[in-house]
Image 1: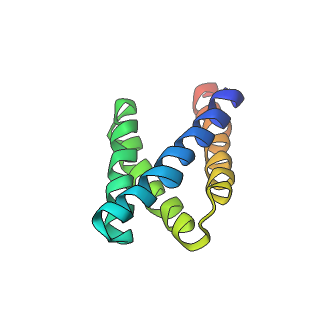
Image 2 (image 1 turned 90 degrees about the vertical axis):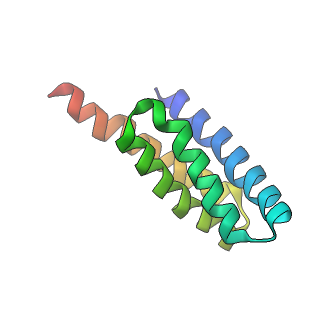
Length: 99
């Protein structure tokens, strides 16, 4: 689970923040629209886990995308995303599964 959570954070940040936001910004000439569209795509990607997680990841995408726009660092986004994944996977879901 730790490897999955780490790998997902690394590759998702590389694609959605490191690639999609800059390319969409260049194409649309609007960082705000690029942020919104990349967050929608990020939320839809997680839709297979249910509507709650889809909405959560859309909002998460807005937050971490804003972090990217402010810092221009995918590393800052990766660390933020990694902490989120570990908290959700080990604390939230770990507690729920134990009952």
